[in-house]
Length: 115
Length: 114
Figure 1 (cartoon, chains in turn yellow, orange):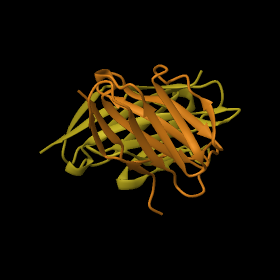
Figure 2 (figure 1 turned 60 degrees about the horizontal axis):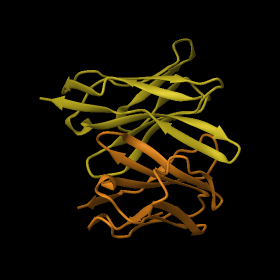
Figure 3 (figure 1 turned 60 degrees about the vertical axis):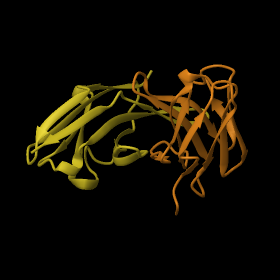
Figure 4 (figure 1 turned 30 degrees about the horizontal axis):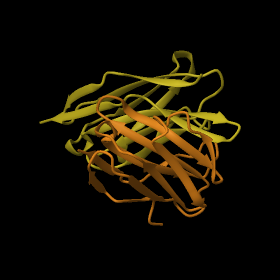
């Protein structure tokens, strides 16, 4: 079965510091992987997705993620945190079924950005 | 495109009452997902449809919950009778149904059952 594990339910960084949010996946086949962001009182928004075209994926708002098969990881990074990055971040893996695709989400990481 | 539209944004009801949540898909999308989000359980997939057909409803908590797609662009999630433990934010999401297609989420309905 395919799944994702997010390490750390809460991460706190200083403004301007590197952001690193961890995600490890489990899949018996090459996965499609996604990162989503959720701001308060809003739905989830797509940050970026990995679809095997390139291992380093760039997303919106300066975020990027690198697919590492050897480590079964898809960690999300941003070189310099901004106050507006404070939100909850979800990693997700696509499970292909006979009837279509189904995303399974990790438990989320709440990012706090401090002055 | 207006995106996925959910209504109402907020619903407060008394235990035992029927609750109906509504969702309009993005035009051209053929997969529809209902999720529930709570602090305790995180984001849970309740049910999803492909081409108006329910594919997996294993996440539906119990028979009090039902979901329908009367047409290709609209879905409802009904809870009857509602209970306080149903209080959560319910999200609807749609996609084009292909393997690398992301989900597009609505802004959710915050349900409070007193």
